[in-house]
Every structure is written in structure tokens, then in C-alpha cells.
Image 1: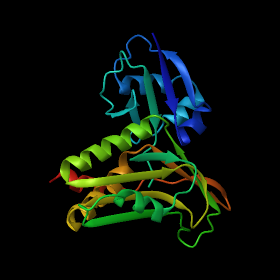
Image 2: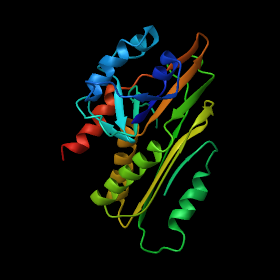
Image 3: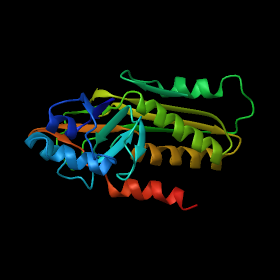
Image 4: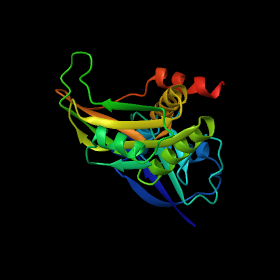
Length: 85
Length: 149
């Protein structure tokens, strides 16, 4: 099953993409696992995910913690802390 | 009522909509956030990016939570995105209730949660180039105090 992955703000600029479709790799069960996998995809992803303590995630458009399970997610988004308002 | 839009909004018109045809409202609170220049720097403009779909869901969730906590008769949240210049409107929250305390508190709650959970990001145009606005710990602290009640 393919999962849509979205990047916003400086994460979008660092990865160079706004969205992509990926097959979740074997062994990737949580957001934290997915971040660890993203870091080794290439220098642009290593840069985007470097500050993993501040990175926020959403699964199917709801905020989740880094220990949230990713299996079955249709859409996963990564972004910096929000600054609207 | 939730709106996420590029266009400006008319504060007076939005307040009129909230009170139209009602006689049970004793208090209306309207908060408007606007673009300002910071720390003496020349910020020519800012661009607000958002997460279409999630933004609307998150604003609806925040509104529903406010309605559970306070007896609000009407509620409006409008948030703009795109390029905005100093002096431009960014966000409008209007709350109406029979009494002022509920209207004040609900408006403050909505803004505190909006600033920490609605997926918007600001990028400022400075003389040194674009710069993403960092989230502020004071905004997180403001949102947390509601959770402690």
C-alpha cells in the first residue's frame, strides 16, 4: 500500500518536495521509525529531519506523537511547529 | 463558522453576521491578528503557508472544543493564507454569548489553540532574504494553561 507523505514550510524547502508517494519500508512501525528511515535517504532528507526533536507529524490530518503507529495511514505529514495566528 | 481564505475580511460585516436576527446575545468579542514589523526590522511582507484539509479540520475541532467549554451562541474563525503586508489582517475570531466572560474566555482559548495547533507557517521577507518564523514557547505555555483546568 502506498502512503502519501507531505512536507511543509522549511521541511518542504529542505527535502525539495511538497508531497510524494512511498511504500513504508519493512521495520518502519512508528513515526519515529519513519523519521530514522528518512534521515538515511539522502543529504536533503538528512538536513530536513536533522532536528527530529522539533519535527511535528500528522497522520490522516490529525496531530500525532512520534510513537504513533504508521501502518494503515493514508497520509502522513511532517512539519515544523506551527506559527499561524 | 470556519473560513480559510486568501482574501481579506471585513470585521464589521462579520460581527453583523454573528448578531443578525438574534436577541439572546449579550456580548460579542472580536479579535483580529494583523501583520506587524518586528524588532525594528523592515519586514516587507510575510507569506502564510497552510495544510489544506487539515487546517479546516483542526479549526473545526478547536471550535467544537470551545463550544463544549463555554455557552457560545455564535462563533466565527477566519484565517488568511498567502502573501500579506504589514498592516494586513491575518486572523479573525468572533465569539458571541449571553454574558461577556464566556465570550472573552472562548475567544482567548480559540486564539491560544489556533496558534499552537492549526497548521499554518509564516515566512517573513527580510532584507537578508526569506526567514521562517520560529514557534514561541510563550504560545505553547498559553495553550497549556487551558489544559490544566
